[in-house]
Image (tube, rainbow, N blue to C red; front, side):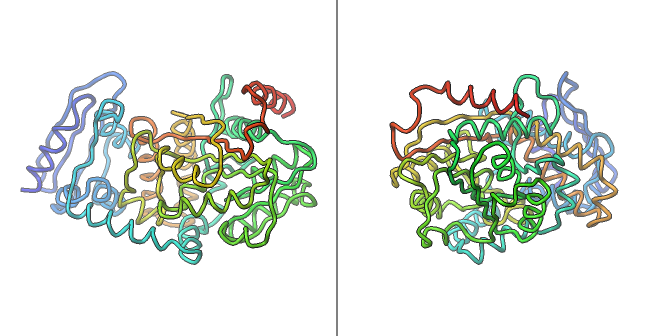
Length: 416
């Protein structure tokens, strides 16, 4: 019965491009028709339980079957399989490859309950789950110079991942309207790329905070190597513990961290930022976001990639921030920038497959590439994008038009 049902399910999705499925009993089914721009994929289910697992939760069931070697690809890779399924049902046209299930609904309720108790200890555990698995993996995947684990900015003339990340740093810096002598706080500083970049380009002091011990150690090392250790500092601390120190910053930047906060803590996050930002301060929040209304985090991502994480809709982000006298003075949506970045990371992982398998194992490599493929499809055909939201405390503190951003960005690009 599961074989029949999963065949109906796939037939309802795959119309353009082709999918050939060989079942455990040796029978084959073909779905779709060849179409320009859509991949052709062939796979095998090695046991009879795979169709059942996919029906229970398509994303988690397919992911675990692939990770365990029970779903084997003969034509195309995991990127092509996910692309085939998602591109046939793009978010823009009302499509979805998900389906309601008791297992998924129960999982969503449990996840929201866990988000509600995402205290400092749980937050650190969640961050460690993803970022303390070893810096070497990220060295193999990311751009080597800036170690940026967030979407690049693929402006005109940008061709490489390294160029896109340099352009992203300049794009964000231009929105901070920085001046000499200012103090800057980077919430969720990663391996220190933003901190180091700002300290190199401006006569300022920058503090970066993280909950990852692996990131902290490498950020400090990279700052020393860059010659800016006298003007930057890094600390292992939760953002919620900073306001009690009473220090305020001229500028705050946070890139790729808000996704880890968890929906019940949105107001807590913005209240802390409001208490940390000077009255004439400016803040730039860069986050993955939902194009549409609020949603839920899928079971695969919750279990294997970002426990406690949640991608916010723009509506709930603004609703949380407006309660603390934070003026959303500029909002920009980046539509396909992360998709291009993710494809570059995926290519780096394929090129370094043997090294990654040696660091971990084959199952980890399959899990990681499934994550990158799924994320790519979410930005190309799903409901994900990036938002850059500039906040200020005083409506008069910034120039009246956005010209200052373009001028600052051009100057930073010329000085690179």
